[in-house]
Image (cartoon, rainbow, N blue to C red; front, top):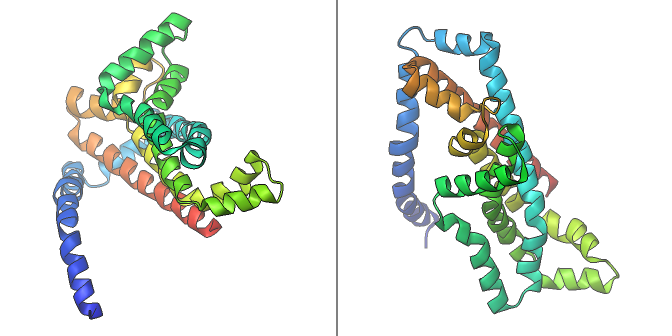
Length: 256
């Protein structure tokens, strides 16, 4: 088959996904860009950058999102290693089902359940409660990404390392983790982006101090009727998220 034919088939198969993204992601972003400039193109952006409480919220949200993503991927290492390389076929299916099953429950119910648990153990609303809630919410997703990366590692490499005397921790750190790094990086980025703009968990667990970017956008657009300012914050957060994703993936593939 000619390369031009392959390129044509590839473009045809990719067209539905490209059109979907164009219609439901890039078009709304373009609309927000136009909306943010109705009162003056640079006005809303300068207001965000010159008022400390706006970028303090952005920085705090990014910090708790990065901490959440790091904690999730670290916690996902051991179960993903066991499920992918140690568990048998039936056990693997059962364990994956147990870890994925929380996604079946609505996010609001999951947030309410962790709020109840934290209240019982004496954790008050704030950044600590928000961090715990975000880790709880995103851990199954992190395990799926880590499992996808670890399951792609050849078992013969693991067995060869063990034959040479490497322990499990050394096998994971020197063999498994480097080969699974793109998937681990992808999991980190996805969890970071979800946590960065999450609204439900911070609203229920953040209290008066844990005010995040999701809550800020909600209050600006729906409560404060500041569509121009809310659109500017949304676009700035989108650009920051895209830049962070690019840097993480670039570093992950550079290591490989």
